[in-house]
Amino acid sequence: MNVFQTILILAGAFLATFGEATLAAPRQWLGAQVDLLPALMVFAALNAGLPTIALLAVLGGVWFDTLSANPLGISILPLLAVGFPIHLRRDLILRDLPFAQFVLGAAASAAVPALTLLMLLSGRAELLLGWGTLWQWIVMTAAGAAATPFIFSLMDACSRALGYQPRQEIGFRTDREIRHSRKKS
View (cartoon, rainbow, N blue to C red):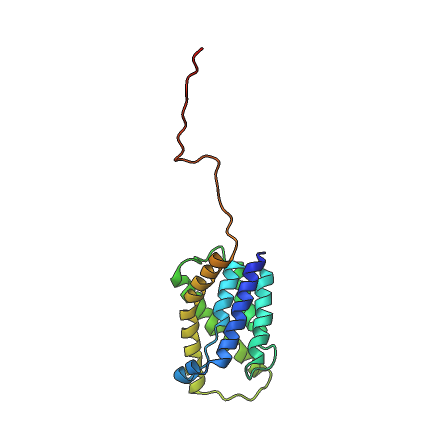
């Protein structure tokens, strides 16, 4: 497990939840709250191990629930339900293609609010559901899908800029000239 990558993912989750809570312009302009944690979970599921996925689900879910009207801890299970299956099939997923990142981000951004809503309804919470809920779900899905390739490129750039990159050297250089001289006897 790469500790630097885990720290980078958790810092991104903290900044995403803090930004979602403090920046009111996207919420007022779109009429819905944009959630970047599912897109970050897709990145973590494809590039990190299970401990990082669990940490992101627990810490990101608690941070998100603390700064929203959700009951504390309700976002943890939907984030895990999205990250774990992607992690199990990550060898079959074309993780470097932006289209695959977009589709996975759309699926995750649609599944997390739907599972959270299902959990809230099973807890007999009184919710206001209507056409506005559908609009918010569509906006969250589209924004998460669009943000996922951006998160992949941003995290890769941060990892290249701040992380340790081992240098690959070989013993023989192709541009080296070898001279042979004959000794006179």
